[in-house]
Image (cartoon, rainbow, N blue to C red; front, side, top):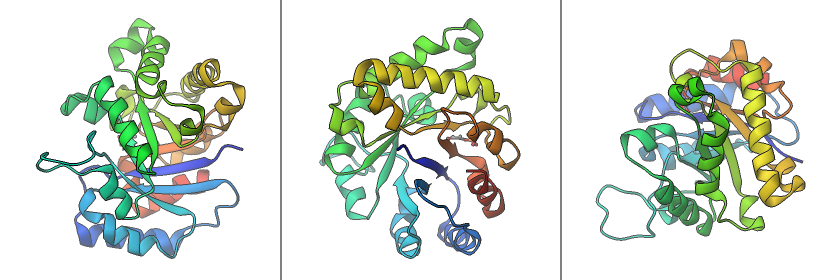
Length: 252
Ligand code: PEP
């Protein structure tokens, strides 16, 4: 049975004190999640050890990183390897976020290598895909997303796929306040599930968690999460305030 997941992407926000305070507030307000539901927090690298210590008492809340390097180790000043993340008790890593693709020129080939590094070091991957507004306006979003998924994860075997979560994040909805309608989200999530089914079979597709991301907030989360193929959300802005993020967790 696939998992419902609400994941926080703090991006480059919050200093160590603010991060600790936010986790504390989440701890105090966290509802009982129940079976097959989990929360994932992806703070900036510098927070990871502190956040890992704080999350030790929260069984349903898991730690993620926002990125990792595509090589195992070496002369890559300023970078962080998947093995380092694993040693810091990180469980998930976000790969392919549109901000990484756009601002850091991460292309499909690099992302596939990052996926390999993450999996071979025992991390699970939240693999992001999403189309820009020009593609949505041209009506070619389905093939755009299919190509991103094929390039990023289709080299994986069946067993490896079990450690992949997909996050569909239309770029025009990220940080813009403009959310995809629940119908747009459902249509794309169903398409993604079909793409996975065609390569890996119906069982693998049914067991895969597919998250929606893009201006998700307490006021629209319940409607989005009620769609049959939307298994939760990857949350940016609204994950920075305990009350808002807890509202989204409640919606799950
Ligand atoms: C994101 O960047 O992953 C995201 C979904 O951001 P926001 O919720 O702020 O749109």
